[in-house]
Image (cartoon, helix red, strand yellow):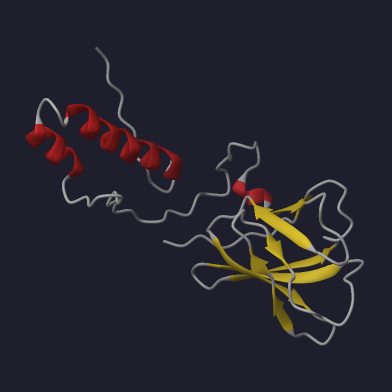
Length: 175
């Protein structure tokens, strides 16, 4: 029987595969617990109740990597326009980014950076009072977990309608 193997690396990213594998191993431990406790313990190794210890290294996908949504990383960060966003509750979601996004800031007219608050659904919302409603196009700065910054200019996130925006800008690869 042919049993192909796969490797997760820069050319073949797979955080989804790593997570599914960890879940499968944890499930197998539960299944085998009543029949072979030693084997069940080996499956979990150094795991603690409620915690599955995984060691990983974040791999930056190449520009040619295609996401499950049909976009290539090299297309740039995509700004999802949210129907509920409006001038009094400006909100946005960023997708198709090479590394996880740490934060998103609005650039004011005088160049000040005003942070948007990340909500649990990975939507960034402008909660800070900036002296009125937000209308028209705005400039933003996205920061990844490595501190890299990408300017996302001339975006209107307050209309609540319209197509998502592919910015053509992306975080650099990290090795």
